[in-house]
Image (cartoon, rainbow over all chains, first blue to last red):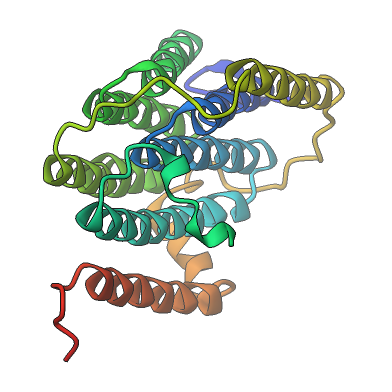
Length: 109
Length: 167
């Protein structure tokens, strides 16, 4: 009941969901343990991709268009996020060396 | 056949994901992330999402990753220090992540899917099929996305202007 046909053989949607969960978890680990701000942005991209995989897997399972459209929107938002995040990062690095994310704590007050 | 492709792509994705978080140099992490993107695009093809596959390759593996590579080339090879100000940070995050994964695992066990809709599978996921929805039901979000991209472009130009160039 939970499978769908792909090129003649039966695939299970929950495999895709499990893989997406593993990738999301890997991204979370990266955000938590890496110190370089650039690396944290890269790991956020990984998490966004995992979320996209979930959306497309549900779209195929339910044969519904909304999952793919949402994946498209989230791709656009991820691209915008990468552009602005990298611009901020370049601006910070231009003024001083911030190799550690803890060096950027002025906004804490 | 499809099952074999799925497992190969899944292994590629997980290996790339481990590479992203374990390489010390950012450039290697970015290249690992490209591997993940390619593997995910193969999976999108397996899920018969052709347009998302193309968009993934062009937008992510192409544009976004090139942007990251440019920034790394601009900033130079930054070495990352292993020290953290928070002691036990690795162990705490491992604990947190294990709890999160357990939660997702538990939710996946009893998952019940809704009855699939009756869609014509010959057109499912094609450009034409996506475009019909994008330009009818979802026209308003689509137009808002263009404004979002415009704002992001203006923001990036503003942030990366030269020092003291406030005209």
